[in-house]
Image (cartoon, rainbow, N blue to C red; front, side):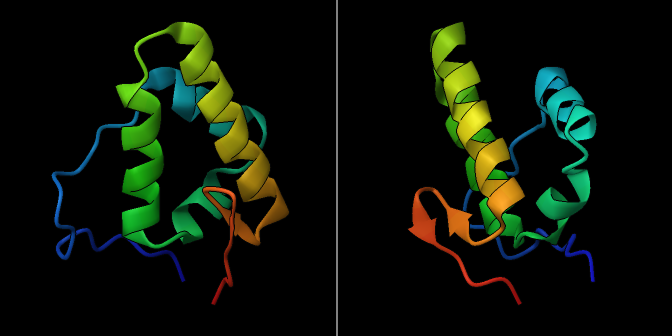
Length: 82
């Protein structure tokens, strides 16, 4: 089931940058991203978007993509998918 209810977020919903969307689509990970709870989706985007330098944004994006691919990691912590 794809979770798309962001109504319980404490922070404002973060927009997805085009380069993030393209990377998710290129690596065929959009489905894995959408299966994450809304707070995780938002946290990933917020974390990437808050980086000031492009190399840092790319490094964070790569970490997110790798974690989505593995499936059991979130921000370098164990994640138990439902």
